[in-house]
Image 1 (cartoon, rainbow, N blue to C red):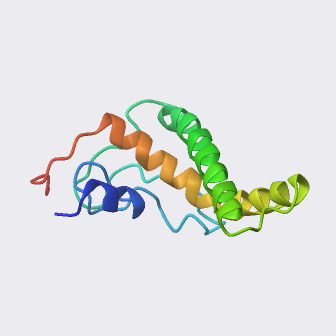
Image 2: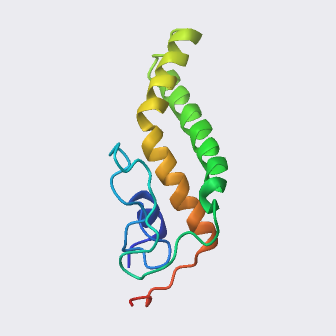
Amino acid sequence: MPSKLFAILKLKCPQCRKGNLLVGNPYQLRNFNKVNDYCPHCKLHFKIEPSFFYGSMYVSYGLGVGISIAIYILLLLFGLAQGMIRNFIIISISLILLMPYINALSKVIWANLFFKYKPNSDN
C-alpha cells in the first residue's frame, strides 16, 4: 500500500493510489496536464462535475507561494541572496520550470480532498 504522500507526489489516483490521474507526463506538451476521465486501475470517475479541477488553482497558488519562500530561504542559507532583482529572477525561473509539475500536483491534491482512499477498490 503506497502512502498518501507517495501517491500524491507520483500523481496517482486518490482512491486506489495505483492508477495515474493524468493522461501523460506533466511535461508532455501534447497532453499538458490533461486529466483522465477514469482511473485506469479502479475506474473512479475523476470529474465529478464540469470544471471540477478549477478549484485546484487555489492549491496551485499556495504551492507556488510555498516554493517561492523555500527557494528564497535556500538562497539565504547558501549565501546566494545577492540582491532583490537576482532573487526575483532565480525564483521566477524556478517557478517557470516547475509550473507543469506544480499544476499537476495541485490537481492531485485537490482530488484527494474529495475522494477517499479505498484499498480494495480493484474493479
